[in-house]
Length: 282
Image (cartoon, rainbow, N blue to C red; front, side, top):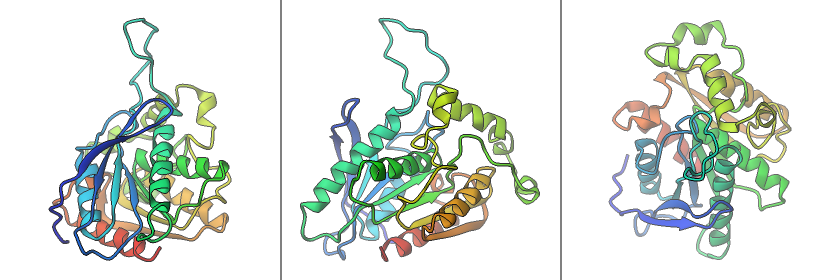
């Protein structure tokens, strides 16, 4: 995997809830022109930032492969209930994080359309909770009649308000602390914390899984072999296929959740190779 030495540039994009911090990674000088990528980190909706390896190191690797990359510092969901107080900022819940991602996507689309030296279209990618936000953003853009994306890729994402039932195979592969922290009941509570209400769990822009998906561009899905969220990825891939969306899905053997947050592991380089190879064909 080539090294990338171009320093990222900090900036912000105007959004409906205020400026959204972004970080821009330019490809090396002389690289073949590629479509820009908007990349969205994970963290259960309530943690993660632009310095997370899953954000920064992934963006560096994608930029080294020739893609302009914009990472999104979306607003994080408040943990637990917060009683109203004049001294406290309002709680952050859905749709605020999705709104932030959509705002950045629209800005990058506008910038890209104004440049004649770039291939048409914008690519969107997300990991874990960032994959969920990205899927919701795709449906929002389609519902609003925005220009279609060139493609979208997901890493160990979850897409359903309630985690689908785990197969015996997946249950047998779960290891380490995530065997307990990613129990279906805890993931479902995390989703409820993100939306703030049971009613919002059913909205397609919150969790795209189980809703019509005909607005989707071609999709690449990378799942971890030992990951309870793989159940959602498997079901979402079937739903995309049923909607006649072109889908390529890989389950990386010997991997656990958040392998893109561990750049020294072999799975990181393997995933970047799969993403860049797929993205180069959009």
